[in-house]
Amino acid sequence: MTSSVATAASQSSAPQGMSLPREHGAYAELAYPLLTALIGGRATPAALLLSIAAVLVFLAHEPLKAIMLERRRNKEQPNSKRARGYLALLAVLALVAGGVGLWLAPMQARVAALFPIAVAGLVPLLLYQGAERELGGILLSTLGLVSAALPVGIAAGIPFERSLCLVGVWAAVFVLGSFAVHITLARRKAASRKAKTRVRLWGLLVAAACFLIIPLVAWGAPAPFDTPLWLFVAAIPSVIAPAVVALVPVSPQRLRRIGWALVLGYALTFLMLVGGLRWIAGLESAASMAAPLL
Image (cartoon, rainbow, N blue to C red; front, side, top):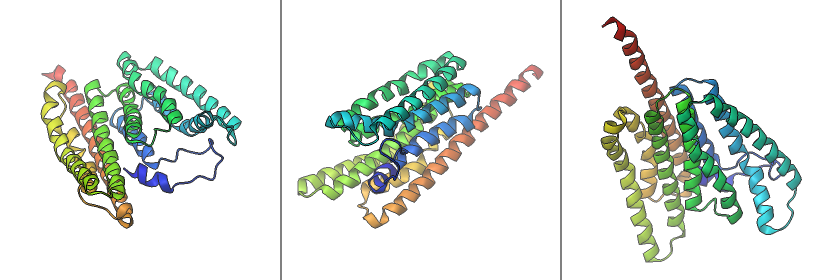
């Protein structure tokens, strides 16, 4: 959610294509799931290398954006050569880290890596078409960033079902936040009564999703996935702010407070997920140690 708000105000003094990604919310979308996987599991060499590869691909966004902008406008941009060199360096490092990480990782992690790799392959097309800040582009990028934690979690020793669970929780949190921001922006632009009614309807739907999606998923998932409800309940702190924003018009002066509320929700979700994963792993370890004695 903070991504759309911060993007408009953030500027970088670094040359175009050489700066860090400006979408501040994207840092959370990448970092929280990766850290959840690494701390909730074991920071194995494969998990660390896959995490490094994901970060390098993320950093490649700005130089790639500069190059796609140049091609779209068919006009050479300042520092385009430096952007190409920077992109090539990041690509080589990401390929090396990711390749070695996948080689060390179990087969499940290699298969799980196909989705974030496929999404990364679509990013140049989004940038070329200028669709990265449209709702569809934002949602696709969010899913790509969050899904990078799936192979990392498996490589960190977290079973596939739980890795999928933690990715699903973070995906739901960030997707609902993106919808809430989109509704806030649409609410400001709505002029006609019909447009305002449409925005209110979308707000009600998103707020309902915030309150209903976690119980629904928690009700259906434990049976096939054998995953405790605690991991799904962890999403609740992070969906409160999006629900409020979707329902209640927020003035620009209060956006910062909403942003901080969302940061607090993310932190609580992170702690609950990591605590739950470590607790489950501890119980399983104790059970395996006690099994020979029974």
